[in-house]
Image (cartoon, rainbow, N blue to C red):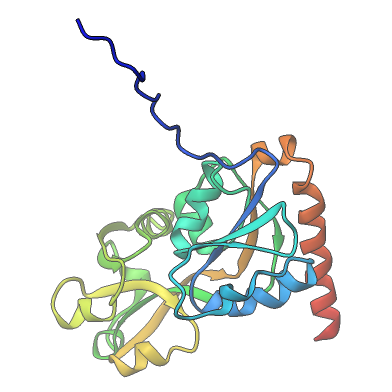
Length: 238
């Protein structure tokens, strides 16, 4: 048998994040704009490309070589942090409640992203409806677990149709007569002929931390305290 002059190279291992690296997961969209001043007050300043709307990058360096940011969907922030892919994150209390990850610790209410998770239905239905008389509801929502738990606590059976967006279309297209969704100003509901009939929970964004990282990463606790001070400073400034 002919011998190989050069033995084959071993397979390359996937590049892993160094144990000393701290990753903060932040959500895309509206909450990010509110979170940036808090990040700055906490001493975390992302690289310039972070503000480039045309950038397709998802991971960014900061002024601290040991800290980087990842920009992901709001619902994915909780998953990245719970599984230890990121050590800290910024996410709404609605997402925390929906996933219920035991690995997450939410030590700081950041006081941003104020909204509410509400039940809404067509205005003509609401005019003749009384939520106190419900025994069974069919709702379209991005939050099936929170929704089912809310109605179960009242003895109401909830049939949840899972959607990731365009919730307001569900009643008009016959998918579900009611929806459960986040409401801020209520303008979107109004423009689609819907009205709020019940509030499930008030929502704000929280700083979440991986519980294991709290014990094993020396930089995590000081960062948590930096965010706590940033919130206090922002409240004083307001």
